[in-house]
Image 1 (cartoon, each protein chain N blue to C red):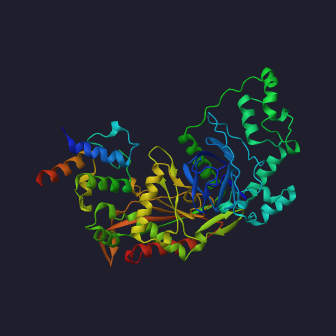
Image 2: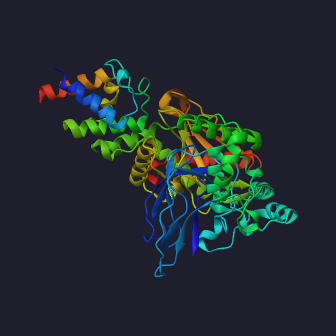
Image 3: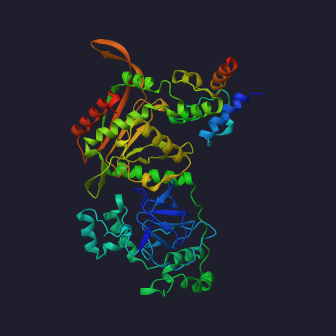
Length: 81
Length: 439
């Protein structure tokens, strides 16, 4: 069903393989809950750009603070394209 | 001909495990080649060789844990005839650690590996060696760059007081629960060799009860123990002083936003990179904060290699160095930092990175912390901390306006510098941070 979610989860896991899969719930906050630092976060953004072709500008970073936020952001963009 | 020895990969490292050989006997190696992977309490590290040569013999098998300074391989000159030798035996199971340095197979310690005489730091180590009647060319140095410290001399003296035992013999004896002191050695000078152990095994087995196995510490436990040793030493030995200031980063961050603007994510630069570069450039004018405190004296570093504190999600912390940080432009520094973080997380740090950071920078801003009062990583003499850049009411030209401000702190060793110098240094870092176009 939700391929966007699977892309987001795969991107996070590629940068932070040690994150427990059970923690990757929609409401999980990337920094506070998954313990990604700013370098990891930028790497996740980079991965998402590679996997979806969407180059997320810095001003949109706050919208991607949670797993669900990433999904909604990408879904919104890809739906209008 | 020279020996490639177990290097000291940190002030608190006493031994290391040879995880993997990346060369075979007969291979030609060049200075700077990575030839082995060594695991310390903190991480697995790729170890470089520091001279050209041909690998003649691997003296230590994969999986073995040996003290710092132990010869790991014998190197011959390029072009010399190499006698083929079998590789060292690999034990089936991890071996117990020899509790003290074993000097049997290290003719000249660490420093001799590059053909130079051992570098002894300070009159104290030399004087103590004279008192003990020790030959310094046989003492492995664990200080920065392989220098011999007073501690090394004391450790070597302790070893000398014990019966001489080959590493392999020590291992066999430990496996079989045999007291080494009870063995008669047949090696040179009465040294106990491996062949002496099995002969005694049958007799010993009858009388000595088997030693209960001690569970090996997990990597996380070992790293915790290494951090505990380093930090306890820091707070025990280093009289810290702390300074802090607040830096208005509003214009700097706006400059960075504009710079990152249309760049794809992979080419964007993080604020942390500006911080690292500002610290590195400020150190050029403050060499008193860039180096090591060894045996009651300061040893200035010859380059500015900033250590970056990187937390591991699996627990613990590493602070590997970025070499010549002050010479890298922002994009190169960003690449170096990204590469370092990735390799730390996958435990592929090079030995020359794990050692020798000349000052460490820690940034806890990602966690929302505003102020870091750091603990210096010995033998360094200073640590710079950055908190989170947060909006604050700020006075500009007599009016209160919202500005984005970061707390910049310094923890420094009062044996080496005073607050006056520290304050000037912090002032310089702040000045550089406010002029990012010069970074």
